[in-house]
Structures are given as C-alpha cells and as structure tokens.
Image (tube, rainbow, N blue to C red; front, side, top):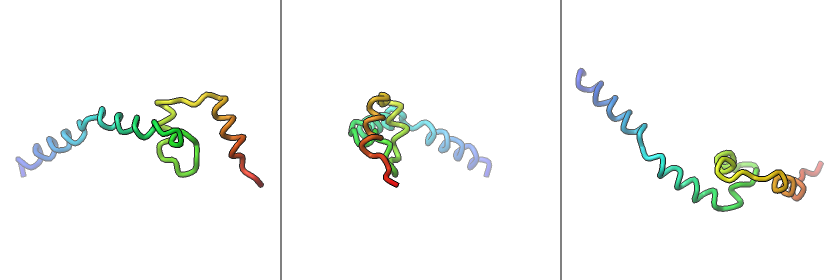
Length: 71
C-alpha cells in the first residue's frame, strides 16, 4: 500500500502533463474549418475556435441575418 500511493500520484501527474501542444494543434485543425467557427446549435468547439479566430461584429451580424429564427 505504501508503494501504491506514490505510483498513483506519479501516474496522475503524468496524465496531467500530456502535451498541450498536441491538443492545440488538433484544435487549430478543427477550427480551420469555417463551419466550426459559427455559433450553430451543437457546435462543441465554438468558444475554443472564437479564442483562436475571433469573429468580427460584421461577420456575426451577417451570420445572424442569414440564420435569423423565424417565429
């Protein structure tokens, strides 16, 4: 048991130190698609893509005008 706790902490630390550059590269690849940068329902990457490629107010206005909800 005494050896198990340090081994568990080492594994937890190793898992927490996984390459963030790999995650960022994958996010850049996903956000390269302009559809991933649109605020559509179900878009899981919108906030992250906005952090990488912020939309201008004109782009957001154009998107909302084209996709306005109809009541």
